Image (cartoon, rainbow, N blue to C red):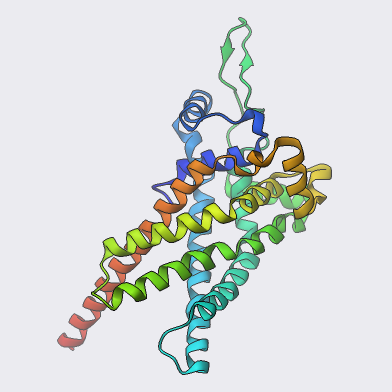
Amino acid sequence: MALTYPLITLSTRAQVEKKKAHTGTLDAVKRMIDREGIPGLYAGLESALFGITVTNFVYYYWYEFSRAFFQRTTNKARLSTLESMAAGALAGSATVMITNPIWVVNTRMTARKQESSDESLPSVEGDTAATTSKKAPGTVSTFLKIVREEGFLRLFAGVLPALVLVINPILQYTIFEQLKQALEKRRKVTATDSFLMGALGKLAATSITYPYITVKSRAHVASGKGSKEGMTASLKRIVREEGVGGLYGGISAKVTQSVLTAAFLFAFKDVLYDATIKARRRIALKA
């Protein structure tokens, strides 16, 4: 998350702005740095690190719990594709309900909804100057502002598309598990293998589900009448006003970030797992 966060900032801002405001990735980076400096690329990082920690803990806990349940029920050492998907659905649904408020806060901080628009403002001298703004609010202040001004339920904005997006990790983990099982029949899986398989799984999952990611992000920052718009209505409105391309704003940055994040996640997880096993064995031998 920390390594790839600038890509999250770029994709999130592209998701919540109108298609006509979209620019190339390099253009967007340059404009953001001109207006906000390098810290602008890391807006909301602290809430994202907290969010990804909680999200992964909840997801892995429930996924392992669900997988163990299916293994006990079916008396099989390995799960079928359908069983893997069911375990992923249970884990994903629990994760969404528990962590949605964190991601609403993060999207608000990343998109900096309260700031002026992306268009550069003219200076007193008539030249174009960088947008000036107040100091960006922190995670707690953003959370309290949402609750105070919009009510506690606004922290659960975008839950429906988020639940639909449960299919994203289902696809990701199912592809990863099936590839891993196929490779394990031939040889030991290495961290490099996990990196590549994790990247492939996330690439497929994110590409398929991206329109719902856009709808979810817009729901997180919506206000007024837009805050009451349903998922289907939001999809139709975006297509009507911006075309199908409006559903895919920032997809290049998002896919790149998602693939790198998933790849690093799987690789680091396997390295840490192996290191833990070796450490426990050494401790056991000494005992």
